Image (cartoon, rainbow over the protein chains, first blue to last red):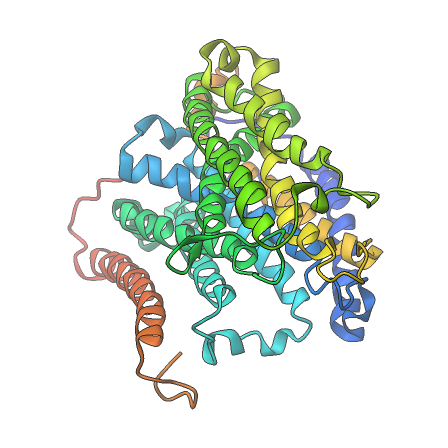
Length: 412
Length: 54
């Protein structure tokens, strides 16, 4: 029925099967939309946020998807600025994943602010001393850049490409993509960093507070670094999941291994910096506030010292070692394990830097503040996942996302 | 965002912060204007041009 829209030389599942798949993802999407409408029409009383938790599940999800979406800017930087030509075979997918991550982040923010009709205030009446204002600026601009990077792929659809104007527009956008990629890298550096800076400047919250250079706490640089390091692993993970679902090889192994190797070195250097930062914080910064390391990890049911070990050792050192070694990259099971751990790593990091910061008591009469999200918060956090599945499905079906697909699946 | 907003001040914070925003927006805007303008020119005004697609 829709064969005229499917790229030439590739095979796609029957329309009924595709419709069934989209229907299943659409049902989850509708559940999320229902919860979103509840939050908009009834207000933020639908959530379990309270005076202790002004930031909650949504902000964690926001920071996590932004970190994982970092694969788009870093892969674009490597492809267009550094000149790693092999990455042209995965850059489309990295951009698509980045587009989904950033549009999801903006959607979550639109729910989180409670009054979306006043969302434009942050631009019009900008507080130039706020890290979050910079995040809002860079996030929105970078989403624009990602849209610009995604549009040429849409214009390559078989039917759209027949229109001369669109054909030439796509060609022109490809020609100057390096300019957009450089702008994207500039914007990403600052908004990834500023998200880290938010907890780093909280001098009243010793768990998050860090020293740094000028106005930037060390968390500013660590967040950017971790996003650039782990974002490509998320791209690899989603590519592998797509290959599993479609039953096809979509990207050559040398491309995956190159991205994995770069990611491994980035994670390795990041985790060294993170260990130094944690050690300095535990030995100097926190004691200066009258606290010791174990004050942040004891006497509570959830935030034990295990979470620090999970973040740094299991989801940091281990994937770095696997991805740096050639033997590790060439072993499919080890590669997958490393990629999954590298994706969990920044998610755990963002969790502690958003939620544990607020859980730790800061006054002598306070106790640990625990928080459990409401179903509305969970549903609206799963909403972007369903949206991502749908967008990836449509893009994969109708757009030439993987340039090597035809070559790797010659039987079609 | 603009000097017309009531809270605007001509200080370094506003100049650097807003300068960065407008710098990025200018590059994005000029880049897209070039792409659309050139596509329009090539399609409707310079029809004889040979098209070399990427």
